[in-house]
Image (cartoon, one colour):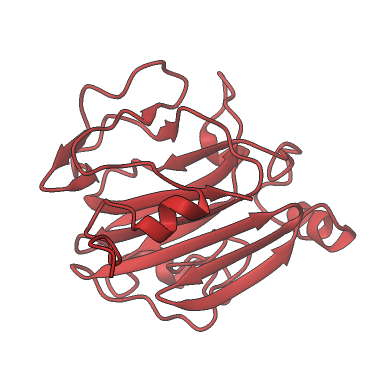
Length: 222
């Protein structure tokens, strides 16, 4: 048996390495990340500590993005929210100097469903954890409570996107269809035709001014 048949936190197994997985966070540095619309990693608001990449509750660092763009991929990571915390994971994000990241990038919602008011806003739970934020609710809603780890998997393969949360597929949708554009026209993203339109883009993590921890961030290009 391989000595690395089971991964420790922030490591890849031998099998993952052979399959082409890449670590985006090794538990010790943020070398794969930089600030949105900045060449550098934020000097405040984010920290690498105890094997976690964390956004501080004080915020102020802004959202961060990967240094590379990704087209078709599987992204995996773990997140843990503090009590009442809100955050997000963006994908295929554009970098627009005069616009925040959320006007271009679909978002997997991070939320303490029990203690943050956003859980009851939107429609049919589409602002709860795991949802395509403000558009499609995660079903089943299987997020763990604040202080506990949740696992996320995002599969983006051409126009097909899947969100997985804690081992279950909670939603799937098709980009760039008539139904997609109709949904966008009836949403808060209607004034932003760039939303979800990029065929490739950055992975992003949100600074919402709440404490959220991340670990085991890895990606495999398809």
